[in-house]
Length: 196
Image (spheres, rainbow, N blue to C red):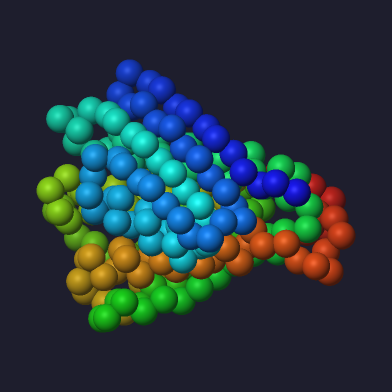
């Protein structure tokens, strides 16, 4: 079974091409025009053992919001397409990742139902030149719209870079666990017989 997809999204604000392999080696090529966001997406791919390529351009003269949100939307859709009917997957994933002073818990469910609980105290301002800290929650919110239940909670930490790096690494590890094939599972991991 090949779990690979290529997707495109073009609006008046952004143009994005994305390639995703759920059964990859953690290889990544990410160019969004936002250095810190590229750094975070590389952690997601590497720790999730996803092969991920993203090329995005957009209205960065306004701010980074449209690119970050649209990549979240497109990446969520890519997961949905690559997973197909979700037969045999573990469905749930979780990870707790430390990064110096930061400790972040991520738990998620590819349930078909969208929800985000984001409890990471980032305050206000930017990391790097163009990444407004509230864009992290926007990214995960956009990703969740593809029918994923996501909980992200900081258990410790004050450094915003460390908090977000721990969050993206934990998200990658949790995603990897959730999309893995369970050798004992023959069908869809739900008593309803469907995940939607």
